Length: 450
Image (cartoon, rainbow, N blue to C red; front, top):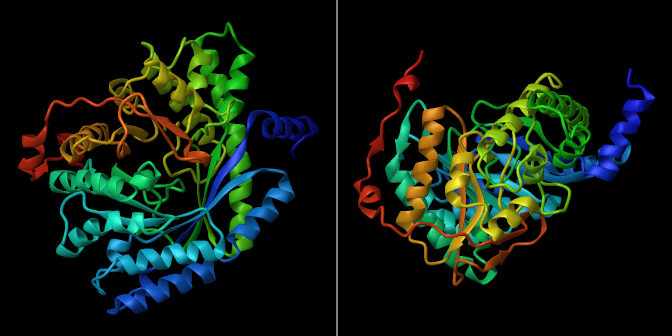
């Protein structure tokens, strides 16, 4: 039984420290929508999303009212569209059908305009990749992702090169809105099939027909807990984070099970990730500063992030029977008030962020760079990040936004959870010859396991 003190503690976490359910994401399989007609496939995709996810927002509202827990986003993820649209040979129509369905049912985003090309790409998948800029520029709620590498396959450098070009073209096509289309596109190494967070969510081929995945978030709760032990050693810091993560995850478990029952779906996973917002008091950077850094970006930043990520996983994994997704700590620059401040002051650089990605949940996330950054430089950043993921057998990702017409020192304003991004410098030393070579970087030795 939950006692009175535990109930009051949860109420305080919600009211005072920004504890929330960051997203309820319904994963849908679309294999039964495949036809040899692009138009008919798009129609069936629209019909299935509306039919199966039509009550998602209403159920989210009921659960929020029932338990008094804010549920910030309701989202849908679908089978990678590179597979769904292959038979019909056309993809843009499906993207527009997804967007129309998302608007019809009132969700925030729909993910799964995605491809898995870590080892190679078919002619159809290459055509799909080339469709991404138009899809993102002509829809409002569709999110896209591409998996270009895995520990088992290595890095598909042909896909990496193409992804740099996709980012550049998307930035241009959405130039009137600070190149916001790039905020809906992420390039992965070791992508997971049950991630509830955008822009990288898709419903993997190993998933059930209809699943509920929940992402919880409570950076403010963790920071407040750490403030109670200002002189504690790092063992005490870790124990405090673990206990707090356990409590946060129990809330997510409750919501996930309730939503699954009410929507007639299978309970998938709870993602433990601490996902920040631009709101003051809801920052992962401020947790690291509470541990003892003057400002994020200082020497010791990677070590404190490693401690945080490990403690969140250890505490959360005991609180739910099904933990998955990315699970750890996100460090998106534009979406975290502390990260924004550190980037603006010069304390946080892209080089430091790259080091941090070796131990965080994802990678270089929501980073605005000068609009004249070349496609080859973007591809090389993707390759560097993919190498970290492949060698360390973890998920890494890149969501870079070359803001068309803007330069270092300016800012891009996206609004809402996407926040404001200070434009950070990138090295202009050319990696063009490396990127043009193409081919594949082989899997590491430890990837060859059976």
